[in-house]
Length: 398
Image (cartoon, rainbow, N blue to C red; front, top):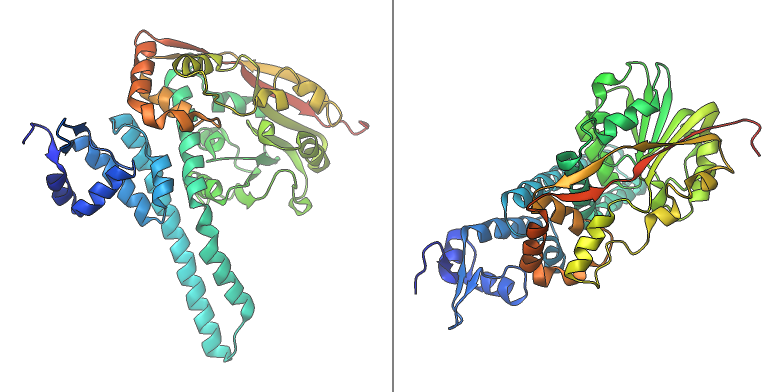
């Protein structure tokens, strides 16, 4: 049986350069299902399935388990998803190349030291061990990068306020020449890449994140040779005192992810110079609420966030949380809303959330996609209730 635009399992396998056994295995384990199954049980694939297979094979090559790959490739191979997936895969390959170059250098240095000194420096062997195990977090790095990309993309495409979140934040930083600045949880460095032309030459900015992968993305985006920037990996609950003191500390959508917000605020207060400022962003209870309602209208079991992050640190309670550590606390709202006219970026955003959606959507993905398409065909309105707290260190504050 032959169908126009479709390939049999055998044809699909031969064209892709993989075995038929592999294609059947991916089908049986719900990793790559055929686009069409006839009543007689014949399986057929389309050109779009080649895009899915490419993603699967590359992730497998990079060391992901098939279980991991199944979780990471549930989207349809339309142009939006494919572009995002390819960009994230490119970052993964770049990370792996940098990692292997570092392993190569360490191997050469260790071999040279043994050759010259005729003895083994066991500390170098420990360095090798650390290098070979540090990439165990590759799956988390992939997911973190993909999630951040999806969230930023939705806002950049459909925000009514065309100033943009990062330029707006940068303006409120009021950066002056000579300042020392620390950003906690810098992610991929978007605050700085979008404002490099506005940045004075003689400032020193330390970008920090708990994720080495995020720091690599930030360093790559900004350029490792810019003398204004340094990059440090640490947990913001334990800010290293050796960093010195700062005139400005920034936590952009970070505090509501912290287990102990008070401890982070106390640490920030300690490293701020007298009169120094702390800028921390968050959102209120109404932020993006229409997205949760949209998802629950499809399946009421889905909750997009296991925790209501605004309850941990939000617009409504933020001033009370900050007041023991800072003075002159003010709130500034970012006036904006989203009008979403395409389903795919909104679906990417939903899949990036920290809830239970991935338990219920993979098996019903096509139905869910149709549901979102219907909701967005005339423009889907989403409330934004975000902004920043601006705090100043007061020396006599107890």
